[in-house]
Length: 193
Length: 193
DNA sequence: AGCATGTGTTTTACCCGTGAAATAGTCGGG
DNA sequence: CCCGACTATTTCACGGGTAAAACACATGCT
Image (cartoon, rainbow over all chains, first blue to last red; front, side, top):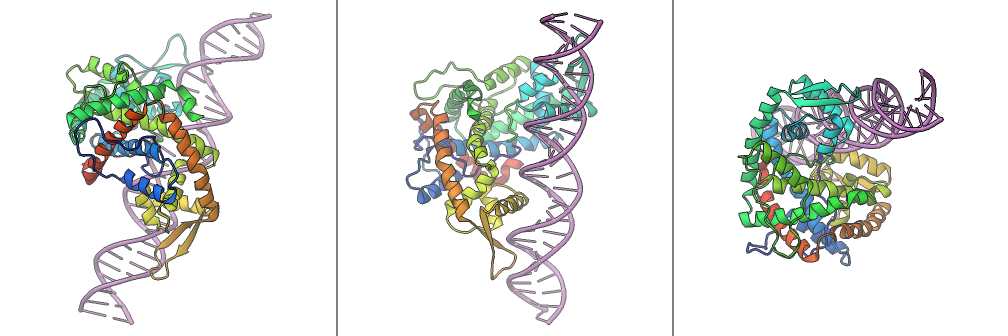
C-alpha cells in the first residue's frame, strides 16, 4: 500500500469455480501458480482462501499502479488525492479527525499531508471559534480546480483498464464485492482478533 | 497497504448489478456512500470504476488486517512471511533476485528482510560457486517449522473470515477475479502509462 | 473557582520501502 | 590479458506511515 503484496498470503474457501456468465475460465494468473506450489508441498492443506484473498491483493496492487499514473502527472500521491477528494466530495469543511476517518488513515498522517497541501496552497485552514482545539479545512479554488481536473482523467483511465472485463462481468464483480465488503465492514474490528 | 486506502480513488464501470446467485443485494458499504457523494457533486461523472476499484482496495485493506493478526502473534510482518513462504513453497533455493520477483518487491527491500531473517536464524545463505555475485537462500529447519506452523492457522482464520460469503458466491468471486487478474497481468506494464 | 478527566491535534522516534548510485563480478571480444 | 558492457546484489538518502507521547483545550464535578 504503500506497499501491497501479491505473494503467498492465503485467502479464501472457494474451489475456483467459474463465474455464472459465459467467459473463458481456462485462464491462468500468478496466484494459481502459487496455489499449485503450495498444494505440491502440503497436499492436505485447504488453500481455498488464497484463491480469493491472494487475487484481491494482487488486483489491488496492479490497479493502484494504474491509478498512480495520472496522479503523478499532477504531482500528487494517491494519499494526497484521497484527502483532497474527501474535501471535495463532502462539500463542506472537515476537521483533521474527520479526514482521518474519511481516508482510513491515522491522524498523524493526515497532519503531515495537510501541512504539505496547505503549503502548496491547495487547502485552507480555519480555527473553530468555539473549541480552539479543532481546525476546519476546506479546499482553495486551486485545490478544487485541481481535483476537478484530475478526476475525469482518472476515471477515464480506469474505465479503460477495467474494460479488459466485459460489462456484464463487471457488474457481477461489483455486486459480489459489495456483498463481501459490506459484511466485512459489518464485522467491525473483530478482524484484528 | 499498509497503507492501503479506501477513499475516493475511483474504479469501475459497472452499475452495481447484483450477482448471479440469490443473496440480498440491498446492502450498503463505505464505497457506495462515497460514490453517492461524488454523484451529488458531479452528476455527469461516470463513477462506474469506483464501484469495482474502490471496493477491491477496501476489501484488500480489511482482509490484510485479518491476515496480520495471526502473523504478528508469530512476530512476523506480512512481507517477511511472504519471503519465507516463497522459499517454502518453491522447495528449492532462491536467489535474492528470484525472491524479489516472487514477492513483487524491490531488490533493496529483499536485501533488508534477508538480513533480519538470517540474523533470526530463519534463513541461510550460501554463495554460488560459479558466479560469485549471486547468493542462494534456503530456509533453516526453524524457518521451515515456523512457516508450517503458521500456515494452517492463517488459512483457517481466513476461511472463517471469508465465510461471511456463501460458498457459491465465493466460487463466483474467485472466478471473476481470476479473469480480471489474468488479463491485468497480461497487460504487462502498460498500466503505468 | 479548581481540578480531574477526556478529546482533538500535533510532535517525536522509528520502521520500512523505494529509486538511484555504488559495488562486485561475469563474459565476450580484440 | 585487458576492456567495455552487462548483471546481481547491496548501500544510501529520503519520503511517508505509524504508535505513543505531548500539548492544548473543553467539560463536568465538587
